[in-house]
Length: 466
Ligand code: LLP
Image 1 (cartoon, protein in one colour):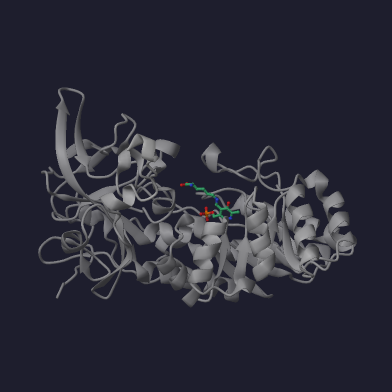
Image 2 (cartoon, protein in one colour; image 1 turned 90 degrees about the horizontal axis):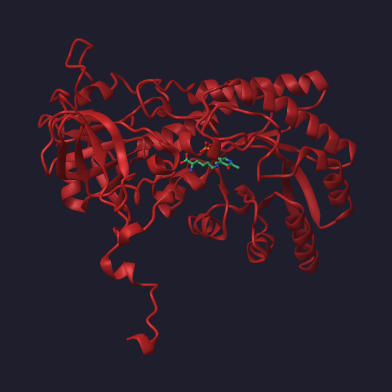
């Protein structure tokens, strides 16, 4: 039995891990919390998530370990859908951008919450289908879908978000050959800039994604002439980890104009998809809008843009990834070696790194951590948390403020639900960590830890080399 305590008043030791435990989960948006909503501290001074003592989870499932809080994920799904229902006068659907974390269990949770799903490859599509998603609720994205992937989309009849001419022509040909009509959304670049890392910006004109807006007239004409293509709507996505609201508001006007243009070409469009992009809180200084506030603004701007042009409200789709799952997960590592560079810095090394979380080395992403087995210990040191890969850049957190740590301590990095597992690798032949989903004191395996045998599973050894 684990007893949890919520964060003591602000006069308590603020320079400890406890500062990350907020007083009440009531009304909080998961994307605004550093730790999952169910986080607490038990009487052993250990971090508890989903009613499970994190140090016990590591004993049972090994280290490193992705720990996914089911309540946080479900709450985020419900907040998206609740806010859409509350603030939008027309039909609406939230779909999960599964590139953030695509695996059977995550798909199953999202599906059970009634959401749709965005997939970007045959692999993500396969997983969504295995998890039982209704094809009507699957939206197939990607800027270079293969002929095989498109054929599968036509075969199963999911929605395809068409990105370019090759895709449109191939889709038309494949659908015609199978005597089918395929539902197509058109992705175009809205020409909206926002403040986020240049690698995850997509709304600007010089982007590899989607049709250039100048091409839209020609695209609409092409689709109109193809009986096998049913243009159901338009899609834009402006980028990821965005805190600003205005770019999302501006997007409504751009989408409505394109929608009217499609109608003027005689297309029976019914849906607009505003993409995802809402950011999460990785550090104390991050201040993203809540899910409810973001959705309210998206609905309001879409409603206003439609009213201004006398357009009936189309079906509104949004496709969040990070803000649904990012803050729902933590990664537990075991601390190993330490190195003091006199007068410069102290390194502590964990048993993972850029293979389970490539975000710091890719985007210079900043994370926060706590020591799960000493939650109330005061933070007395500034250390650099390094990974175990053969790369100087393999740093999980630079200048982390932590209590004194020893080898064997459990270091928990927060906010690792989005784009960690999904971008993980076997670099240096590290086996990928296990993942568990936790709820009400129960932990269930959702990703089996890779073994050494797994690592050579796809190797082939030609007999002349054996
Ligand atoms: N829709 C489309 C078409 C997208 O390309 C993306 C993300 C999303 C929705 C979901 O965006 P979100 O709500 O998660 O911001 N690996 C990077 C993020 C890449 C985002 C790719 N597209 C990272 O780790 O920050």
